[in-house]
Amino acid sequence: MPRQSKETPTDHVFGALAHPVRRDLLAALLEGPQTAQSLADRYEMARPSVAEHLKVLRAVGLVAERQAGRNRYYSLTPEPLSLLRAWLEPYEQFWRGRVSRLAALLDESAEDDKSSREKDSFHD
Amino acid sequence: MPRQSKETPTDHVFGALAHPVRRDLLAALLEGPQTAQSLADRYEMARPSVAEHLKVLRAVGLVAERQAGRNRYYSLTPEPLSLLRAWLEPYEQFWRGRVSRLAALLDESAEDDKSSREKDSFHD
DNA sequence: TTGACGCGTAGGAAATTTCCTACGTATCGT
DNA sequence: ACGATACGTAGGAAATTTCCTACGCGTCAA
Figure 1: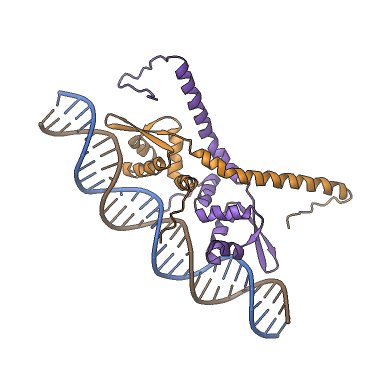
Figure 2: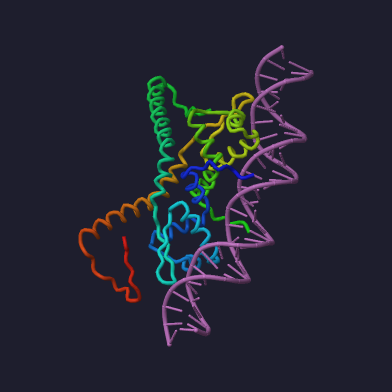
């Protein structure tokens, strides 16, 4: 059964980044535009396989192509990664909340717990 | 062929986040600790399947378990997401660089490089 | 033009992932 | 103690992903 047709752009970005080879390709493109062949040589992978991965990256807008004669250069267009940053935000907020709550707890317990020297853990 | 045993913690985090259900589970845990059963009901999925996903999340440290009698509560521990933020950084830097380079280009006409074979310029 | 080269995609085999039911273990209420 | 409940995991079927070779199209250099 197909998963669902209810995928958001963020879902697609996560899907594109899910594969290590695709992340490696993005990292390689940080150095500048490359052809599929040069990328394939670099990763000891057949060119068509690299092309397939690049197609996935292009579908989510992480990569752009520029035709130059019979060569085709792929370049990095990292804008969609902002979706990833946006996805991250609630969790960082959660994390900050947890930390500050923990700090408050430590503060209180430091006042209440002057006599105790043991390393009591409070997560169990 | 198994891909490789050379996976970094960042690779594992990306792998854990690759599946929409697992991202949904994390989102649900933002509201507080939950049992596998309540999460399963919420997503119309069998409990063992949810348990499997939670196992993956736990393996990368995104989720913690707390036993309470015969119930087991899963809670969010988003620290590993900092790896994701770190991964993001070079791309944001790249993006900022591109923007400022474009601004510079608009400001002044640049000199020609020594690329003699072909014209190689940004046509944007 | 012709032949060599770079390219994307089709088609399919192999590996992986996902999700279920069935089971065994531990805990709660009576 | 006893049954009901919550849990994790095993085992396997189905879907998906990944990667290759083979092919056809367009481009460069003569």
